[in-house]
Image (cartoon, rainbow, N blue to C red; front, top):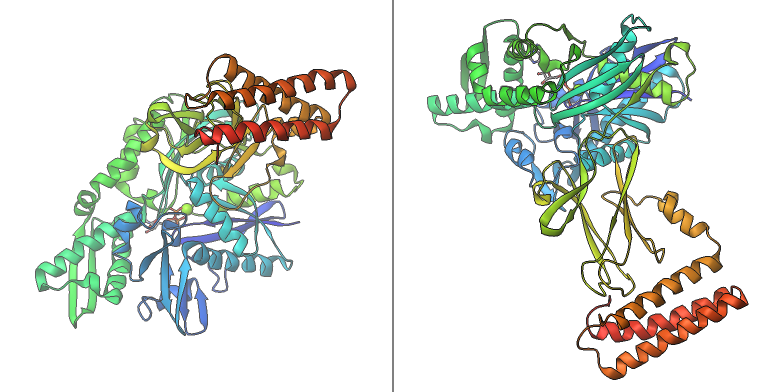
Length: 601
Ligand SMILES: Nc1ncnc2c1ncn2[C@@H]1O[C@H](COP(=O)(O)OP(=O)(O)OP(=O)(O)O)[C@@H](O)[C@H]1O
Ligand SMILES: [Mg+2]
């Protein structure tokens, strides 16, 4: 089965495949190796790529680009709010998510996932035409700092496009794989650490990777999935919108067509400033019949973007700080061509290390290599290639005092599974609420809340007695799955933090519990339940409002259960009778405890 590697960028998308012992980057119908991530929908026609990009001036509100900047985000995210003003299409909130609305044969709404799926479908079909066979399997690259929600949304987009994701691979890991394969390595001695700085149109990734003879182990990641070339373009657009205003007292940000033309011209000028010190802006009839001519120097551009550049350098420094053994720095992504960024990075490594600029196809190449490896391609060239990624964020649970208890740290190699035991903090507490966060901050609320779930029906017990195992599973795509499991009753609650429910049957200790024969299971549960209630009675931990008569009936129910347990011990297991006794005990105890507010309703 052939699998494709797709670099789904913010500005453009590339698809590659391993064929005849090397990666082929597949060209589109125009002969281009990169397809712009633009989708234009007018009347009953949907066009993608170059054609769509050309349609922006004519149909600014029907042509969507930069969907990657919105995918998996909430409408209220600061990042979404801060840039939407400068896009010619309209974004609005639907179920808290950003959607675009397109007027064609009536109004239609599209999510970022749906727009991305249109692009992925196009890439799929380019691959199929090139190979002459249907292709479903794919490796898609994403920024290291993509959150759980962004990764899930990307997977969902692939699913909508009819693709099966073998792996969501971090951009920089893909770059290292491709770089490693391209360089002639001395397999005996070539074990070294590489620092990858990826800066494209929308995201920054800084990664340190240990290369051990083709096994790439990612060690640290830092980054920002909303920091890249588009932000520099936004700054330039803002600069010239103001200049136009001061010259003519007219706001072109309200004119989608003018805004788009200005944006395209700003990007062109920005790229020109990487090789020249001055760039001109020339836009005839930009707005209300007014021509706009201006220029910008490299120094001005650097000043306008200085805080963004500083943010990039801070991230790089963070990863470099503890890494004195870095042997090589590699730069990937279009925006690393900016001279200021290159100079500052050279300064950071004190000019001592080689700084290598990779070509724009490196990420797609790495994705195609990984796709070949994962689909079982037996090429000897790929024999030693293995990539071990790390968790992008620390993950944990909010505990007492709003503190974040980390269950998985951000440097853990994935896939990984870790669990922690939690317990109740009040006597007879019947449920526990878990708030799951991603992020490195100590205060839970300073991190990103992924989801909330409740494990209920915990049998009455003194505080601290129940043992609730909460397990975090991160798969190789950096997607998280959380399960909570009551070790004493076998009750389990699975949470897929967002997205579709997963199959929790794979959970080991849950499986162990379920694997025990039914007789042992029912006995364990009844044993546990009875001894808990006994403890509550003897240690006087029943709610103060429980009447003497209620306490007496509780006590008699517990006594019956204890007698049954010791008798059943001798007689051998009888599942049905255990279940009947469990039912009796639960009915009696819960009817009393519920009345006094200590059991779930
Ligand atoms: N010579 C240049 N100087 C400055 N910027 C450049 C240059 N060439 C390309 N860029 C910018 O690089 C960006 C495109 O790079 P790239 O193709 O790596 O990004 P992407 O993969 O689409 O985005 P991302 O990976 O961030 O999602 C654009 O913002 C483009 O303007
Ligand atoms: Mg990219």
